[in-house]
Length: 359
Ligand SMILES: [Zn+2]
Image 1 (tube, helix red, strand yellow):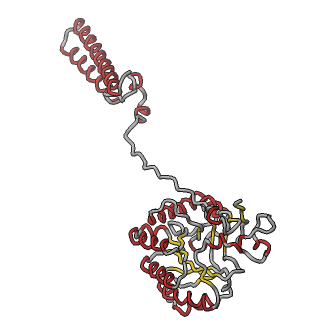
Image 2 (cartoon, rainbow, N blue to C red; image 1 turned 180 degrees about the horizontal axis):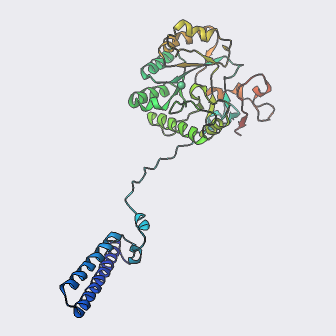
Image 3 (cartoon, rainbow, N blue to C red; image 1 turned 30 degrees about the vertical axis):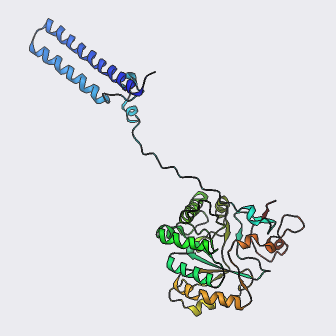
């Protein structure tokens, strides 16, 4: 058995031997020429011929062939030589994501069914008392932290939809605030990494990659490689109802959620009274409502007032949004058919998709 070094040595020895034999042939030719016509001109021709042979051989490839190549290989066409192995950067392998599929255990004991990933929600259980507050984007972590403290002080939970790019751009602060959110019992869901508008024709793989990147950013920030996200809310509510989004969300183990009330606090020049009016004068203010807010100044100023007024109207601030997935009232099976009770009320759009039994 030969080692790599030995092979290189053998190959180069063979090549040198070949060159030597060529040189010897040229010298023999020169000596024959010399014997026939012993002139300095003949010797010059022979030397020139030798030099040309050496130069031609050198131009065909390296003197030292790589391991495994043979002399016959070294005389191959230049295109093959160009394909000789070179040092290439080894890509850093990306570890696979822990599956983000909604866990049946989560709903066990509290509900009989769990929704199919990819299902679309516009609100929660209309027969309960809960109204949900969600905060999108999280571009200002100081304000997000303020919202967490307000909610904790009032004994309610929020659901955050941070865009991954804002986690990535403020790593340490984002990590601290997101960890606090989990410690306070709030929920973190998916708002894509790029926060780009998703078109109906967007490729499933591209949407999924954007969701994946956000999930990785959240898990990295939390130091929890198996943190479970439950929903995707697309930027601008884009691509709702499109099959590519549903497929990508399903592959990611996420349900899709929009909102039923938009505070519009992100509008330049918005005021707290205007935000309050957008929420509480809305015809959608009813049980199961999902309120969209952002970590913009006006929304965050309004947040404590919003919580107070929801409760004053007799509703409950519904806690984390995953409750709409595991709400026993929303997911009670009708007659063992595997369909939730709300499906018996076609006027209610709890989700546009069916539910899938877990048992
Ligand atoms: Zn957004």
